[in-house]
Length: 111
Length: 115
Image (cartoon, rainbow over all chains, first blue to last red):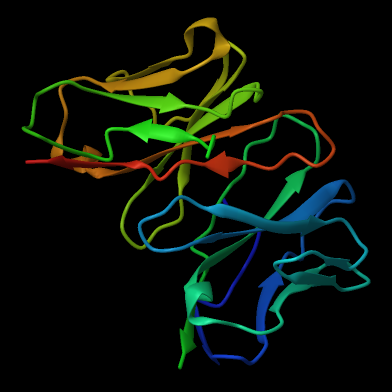
């Protein structure tokens, strides 16, 4: 079973920041937080991951709370092409553990 | 683009027939994963390979399902005696396993419809 909880859906206006929350209250000390997204009719796409520090790349920022029990994925300037299902996953880094997907959050970016 | 390639993109078959899907991973990747996804659900893990060795199989993978990865390159997923419940998107992903920043790269999937 997935170890994360996400809202089933969210809306965001084009050009505004999209903040997607994720709860992972049972996360272990060696588990990383990963985010993937899936645009309709495509396979999931890696976005970002982190352990405890905030991370940023060209796609998004990841903010992890100090107790690591929750995180937020931030898309700073959402576009219509960011409409997708976003999955938050916790996983041990470098091991043999597979990615376990939940149902994710369906983000709809509106014009 | 040398991403993960899956063939075919779509497959329609009749109940009871056998089907085979192919996945070509990114060439330097040693791990290859198969997932299945039904409408409204996240991808469900089926099995994965490290090189040619099949290291884990989900209990979802019944005896009718078999996967191979000869020579640690491409992989095939075969479903024998298909049932309507097998209708789903079958996704393949590859990665460089064991790396400190392992990321899975997914193909676009094979959509199976069993009539």
